[in-house]
Length: 428
Ligand code: 4AD
Ligand code: MG
Image (tube, rainbow, N blue to C red; front, side):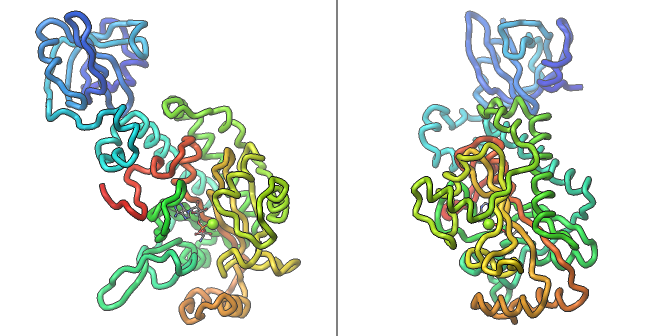
């Protein structure tokens, strides 16, 4: 029987004989003793080695693996208030000296990306990975609680969803296909069988520049709902985000604190989120001196400036037709704008969700595909969905890595992912 570091700190008593296994996180010598912070998947605990055992412990490197037996002592000076006085080393693998020197590494983030396969052992990565775990779990929980069916969609596709510029071509026997940018069209097909569907899967975008919030491979949580409109998207997407943030606050306070996250800011994330018409956003940005007009697309900089005005996420809705993909339904009251909505995260983070109402009429859809300079033949099966029992429907896609970046308070999306991919990097 082995105890985790967490079990020791939470429930072991003075004098208990325990067995622990893990990795050497820190090591220091004091008089004739060796103090080792032992790291496992649950946390860290201080081990104390003396006598002959100290001689053996001295040989261990940072990140050497060990299994020990020892006696629990209450020690207010030890992190977590307890330590384990080792009585036996049951197993050890000393290995080679660990190559990452933390202070040198902090100065060079490219180096840390080169050694990401080892750096994921660090406390910050550990904390992020545990929050990420809770986020993915909460996504599934929320959709299932709300009557959505989970579905799986193809990764190899034959046409663009979000415009041709960011498609990744793949050689597929004797022709070229693409990696999916979004499961949306398949989800739209599936609502005619299951009405409310969701999927959590990777999406791919050939993003030509390195930014703080773009990856070439990202995790996408997408939902589609029959008999629904833009306001249903607002309700479900804000419910989803509030549920995820609540779960992280309930389960991951320690991890948030390791990341230095100000949790007060996350506590403010409650429904309803302010609903901001695109036109109001343009006015706010103009007042702040930005050079934007009705019809301008908002990039990361504009969103950052806009989101300094708000403490919770917002719904930004009613975007002009020309800055949204062809499938967005135009507002019948005001056809130059679409019934589209993005969710923008506060503290300058910006867009984390994109969605809205879809065109349900086949002729309107064909007309808009042509107007956007696309070929209806490429979208034949997608148009087909409107030919048989078409219904009003709407949906959205959440960029999970961007959400994790915001919840963790990270500067860069690549630190929200264990093995990030961008224009320059596909290894490790
Ligand atoms: O706004 P986007 O492009 O919308 C769609 O793909 C829709 N088809 C979704 C739908 O309605 N089912 O992407 C949705 C979200 C963005 O808000 C952003 O959070 C994330 O996906 N995203 C990216 N995340 C990281 N790296 C990238 N290159 C991303 N591109 C989009
Ligand atoms: Mg978008």
